[in-house]
Amino acid sequence: MSGRHILITGASGGIGAALARHYAKPGVALVLVARHAGRLGAVAEACRERGAQVSALTLDVRESEALADLIARFDAERPIDTVIANAGVESSLGREGQAELLSDALAQIRTNFEGAVATVLPLLDPMRARGAGRVVLVASLAGRMPLPDQPTYSATKAGLIAFGEALRPVLAARGVSLTVACPGFVATGMSRDYGGWRPLEWSAERAAAAIAAAADRGARGIAFPWPLVALVGLGRCVPARLREWVLRLLFVADIRRGAPSTRVGGMVRVEGESVR
Image (cartoon, rainbow, N blue to C red; front, side, top):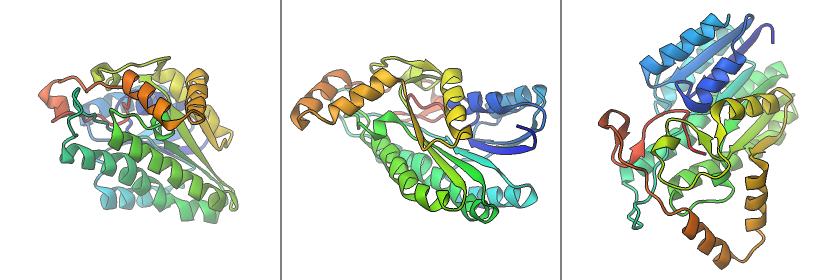
């Protein structure tokens, strides 16, 4: 791990914070990006106490041009060997199937997809030129099996999976690995506001350890937990009408109302704390 330089978005909580703590140790430099200065500061301090050198950037990943410019500057000063695009938000339909607010849908698209693209693009050519690097996209099992209560969230994660799969062979030809992580349900601050079913939920620490291990060995992808991954695969083999009926039965729930400071409309606005 000596000499590593790792960038993580959505580092103020959930999987992102757990990844930061996982990597934090002497000889490691971390660049942590998130919107909430207070939570980000606490994570950064915890990582410094573990011996890591930490740069904390309070920035919304939807500010894509500013984000890309800052990442390019950090890489120019000291090459980033691992980038983890983890920032994410989610919303849901209403319990009676009411449509998401347009603002919520667009926020998910810009955070979950545009923000991830803006995070990794500035590093692709430098990594290819160096012949080394690790790119990690934190997607979701919802990208493999879209959920009827979260259509926009599912679409953004499916787009992220496609983006990664398209890039992987191009990067691999120049020594750069790309790992697409598809977690199932993870216990985070966001998951506490989700009113739906959360089978086989993992802790953020367990999820982070699994993602980091996959990235460090250059795995093409990782999905967990395996029983849920198997069910998703099985679901793709059954008739669409049956699959849709089961999904509607299990996943018809709206995000519960939370404190105004953490929510706008029906959406949880916390980076790195995705339920999936």
